[in-house]
Structures are given as C-alpha cells and as structure tokens.
Length: 378
Ligand code: PMP
Image 1 (cartoon, rainbow, N blue to C red):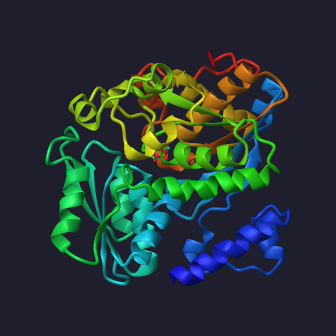
Image 2 (cartoon, rainbow, N blue to C red):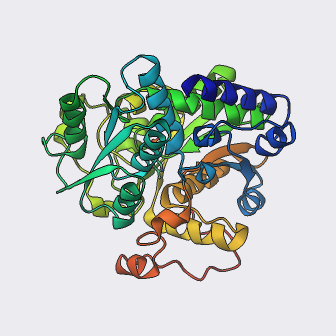
C-alpha cells in the first residue's frame, strides 16, 4: 500500500509541476489516486479575494480542509505512519498506532489506521469537544478520556499514549506528533506545493504553531529555494511562542515542561499556541523572521468576515492564520504575496468557535461588521 501510494503521490506532484492546478489537471490526465490516502495533500491554493483587495497584496491560502480527514493533519498522520512502516516499526495490518491529542491529528491517524488495517488508540482530555470523541469512535478508534493535567503528569494523554504503545510491544507505534520530526517532513511537501503553485513568487509565509510541524517544514522548503522568503508566526493569546521568537527566550525542555502557563480559557482557538519548546517548533526557530500576536476577538471577526465576504467557512486556527496574513501584508506593504493555511473547516467547531451562544459567554460574539474593512485586525 505504501509503495503504490508513494508512486501515485509522486505522479500527482509531477502533474502539478508541469503547470496544472493539481486536482483538475490530474483528473484530466486520467491520473487516479490510489485509495483514500492518495487523496491527502496537493490541496488547492485559494486566492482570498477580500483580503487581497483590502491589503493590496496577494493573500493565498492552502485549502487543507479538503483533505479526506478534513484537516491539515492528514499529511502528518500519513508521514508518521509511512516512516514507521518503512522502518519496520509498525506492522500493517494489525499494528496499533497511539497518540495523545484532543485535536485533528487523532482523527487523521484513525483514518490512516483504518485505511491500512491497523488499530488506533487516542488518549484525550475529557474537556475536549464531545464531537471529537464521537468522530474517533465512529472511525473505529479506541478512545480514553482523561482529566486534564500537565504534560509532566503520568496521566497526561501524551504519556498514556506513549505507555500504551510500549505495552503493546513490537509492531505498534506512538505517533508523538510534537517530538517526531516526521511531522515537519510532511510539511516540506506542503512547502513544495506552495512553491510550485505560486511559481516561486512568494514573499512571506505565515502560520500559527501547535506542534510547530507546519511552520518548520514549510519554512525549510521555502527558505532553501529562496532565503528571502519571510516566515512569520501568528500566536494566540495565552501562548508563549511569540516571546520565544521575538525575545529569544528559550527554555530547556525540563524548565518549559515545569511551567505550563497556558490556561485552556486563555484562548478559544484550538490546535495552536504552546508553552513548551517541542522538537518540531525548535526546528523552525532559526528560520523565523518575526511574529504577530492574534487575539480571540480578531480570530472570531476574521472567521465571520471570511464567511460573509468570501463564502469560506473555516476553523479557529485557519481564521487566526488569516489574521496573521493580513498583519504580514501590512508589515510588508502592497504588492507582496503572502501565503498561509486554512487548517480545517468550520464544521469541526460548531459547538464552540462557531456557536454564537458559546462566543457570547466569552463576550466574543462577532460584530455585524461595517462594510467589510479589516479594522478589526489591530
Ligand atoms: N490547526 C489545527 C486545527 C491543528 O489541529 C493544529 C495542530 N495542533 C494546528 C493548526 C497547528 O499546526 P502545527 O501542529 O503544525 O503547528
């Protein structure tokens, strides 16, 4: 399965390199993808009209919500599993893939596991949105919900997932998206797609970071092609990555893990922001040209704006990425091309980020915006 999939993915990349737009051209060329895993990646690059017109820049965003599992994390799950298979660490079919996550990575791993006949175990905090646990169950994953605790606690989902893989023995793997650099390597491909889709005309890449895999992988490809490409982080409230980038404050892993500053209620955005230095984010640090802070207010207003002005229904991290893209465009000035990612769609956020009553509880109901300027981006 792995070899057939890889060959298909290469041929799709080739079709794109020849000047196509990926999906459309590969279809016209009679190129069929091999199974659901073949449909991961090679996402369209969408020009966001309203943001481009408002900033005088080209604001472009990868439509990661079109991956079969619904998020950017399909790329990461596939790469982690591919590498484990290639190195003989994972048995397929039959092996167990474990991860500790409340996010999209669990759903992506559960889907990839199913496609390969593997089993999947996901440990998650019990305050995570119930839809996520339900989706994981529906995908056939075993789910363990745990009281939220610090990463240094043995009952943290990451530690539970690590122990579970070890207990299963050979042929089973702990995905370890925060520390496993396969995560970053998945996004070297994302960077290649951006380069090819823009014909190398990209001035800046902007992204939030959860594990840091996206910003590490994309920046490594783009800077290798052209060191002048600028890379910016956009960081939500409650996260300390902004400080690390702008002030060079680096903690050792031991120090950082002992100081879990992030309170779940510091931000309503999901999947981005962190208060410890992970291996994947560590890879990106030396390639960062700056960072922006993004508030929940800006993310909520941006999501409402994108829906109203462009018909784009996106999740909280995607909205935050667009806030970052506008800030980068303003910093660079008109005439530049700024690229970001739409990590997932709004459907996965109906109980929180796209629930007006939930937003109202936090005083974040979006304003019935005036003529769609971007004044809400500070
Ligand atoms: N958006 C969503 C919805 C996510 O689940 C994640 C991953 N935690 C991110 C953004 C951040 O991406 P990365 O882990 O590559 O930094």
